[in-house]
Image (cartoon, rainbow, N blue to C red; front, side, top):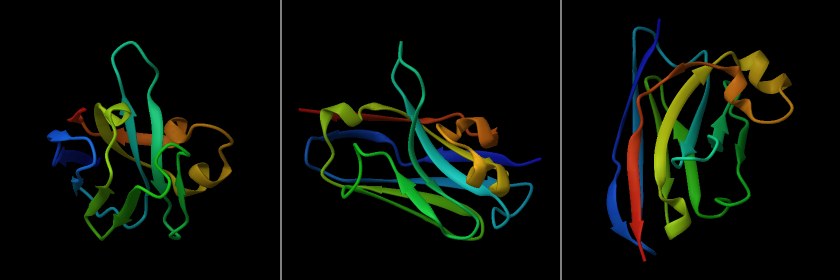
Length: 125
């Protein structure tokens, strides 16, 4: 069983930066596919960035060039630069099976087995 806890959310102005962290416990995160997802009330959860066990990284088109995902043994990070009002959402980290992550065509939320409770990011314009 893996427990994931996000931190680092908050209120910032457009153009500023935030760094989200996700701490894992119960197991190291080395063997997992890890991802950041976000959700706005009334909308579907959106994949933001996924980093697989082998280091393969993918980003949503909307965040390419602005967000950077990274990981270490027990953490997942999301560096968010040049934030926009459209980035306002609750951000969730997730961990899943790396083989399933690699095989899924489409949103990889279906590959995730463990989810954090989320951290709210609010961007004021």
